[in-house]
Amino acid sequence: MGKQKDLFLKIWKTRERVCVLCGQHLGIEPRAHYFSHVLSKGAYPYYKLNPDNIVLKCIPCHTLWETGSTEKKKGHRELIKLKEKLKRKYYEDTNKLSSSKKDKLF
Ligand SMILES: [Zn+2]
Image 1 (tube, rainbow, N blue to C red):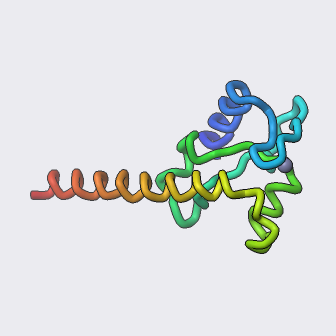
Image 2 (image 1 turned 60 degrees about the horizontal axis):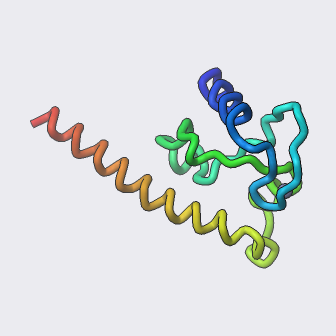
């Protein structure tokens, strides 16, 4: 948990503190809900601590992203594009990972 918190703080310090979806300013206090994994931690565990996979969102946008219908997510197009890009990269990276493991075994 500590590593993730460190990463969140680093992102908070280096990025513009606005919601990636609606542009709202997020204030001065970093809150866990502002940090959103583009590829979910559960399904894509290797990107849990990848800063490219974390975007800042205001709480209403974060909730909409997690639970809203596709219809409501029309404004999320850019983020959906980013998600597809990261997904491709994820598979490339994890393929590399498993082939380097094979190299060690044989
Ligand atoms: Zn927002």
